[in-house]
Image 1: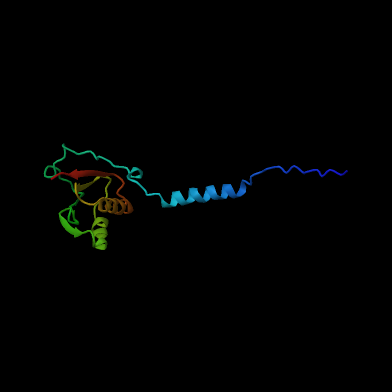
Image 2: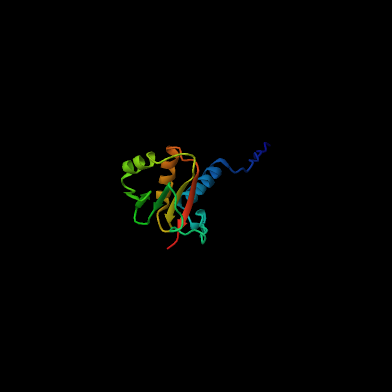
Length: 134
């Protein structure tokens, strides 16, 4: 009599599709997750009490107001008119003295950075930045 041997088949789970599905789920949750406020840094900038605008007098002073006007040694320029502003800064005396860059507290940060870039472009390496409180 012939006995039929049953081949014992080994039970196995294919892991390759499981890994693919897990990675697809991770990508899905990363893409659809909402970016929270935790990725932004909130800064409390220091306030100055020792600076009074009326007291400071300098031959090289730039004042940025909150409405976009920029005063270069009492000449008024608008932030949108960069060419005239650059020409006025180019004509300033750069004899190694420090430039005073004063900005009102509610003026845009972009304007201050733009002025710093222009000053650096024309060789003003020592710039003092001050905040004008209202």
